[in-house]
Amino acid sequence: MSASPEEASRKIENIRKRLNFSKKIYDNVHGYIDITEEERLVIDSPIFQRLRRVSHLGLADFVYPGATHSRFSHSIGSLHVMNKIAISLIEDEILEDDDVSDLGLLLCYTM
Image (cartoon, rainbow, N blue to C red; front, side, top):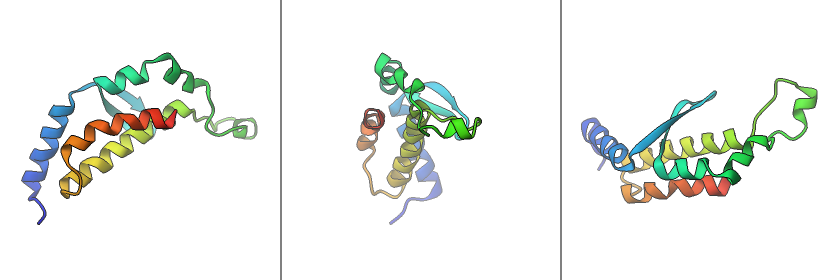
């Protein structure tokens, strides 16, 4: 049985409070992305920051100068999309809200 819109909204708000988003990062595709303190620690690490200099498009920017996309921005966008998917799964009661805190591991996977 699916939750009412009010219950779903309340559940999302409770998840957001529990995750304690501490920072926002601006992404050209997704706009402002909320990140938790744990995610911030991973993102601010030297090994993760190195991804800013790793191209996600290979040599495409030599042919298309406007084509720039780093592994860093890809990883941040992937985290945002996974957070949205997880919240949707929690709304549909497919995923427990305790499982959401493990999404920061996605950042490590994308490295």
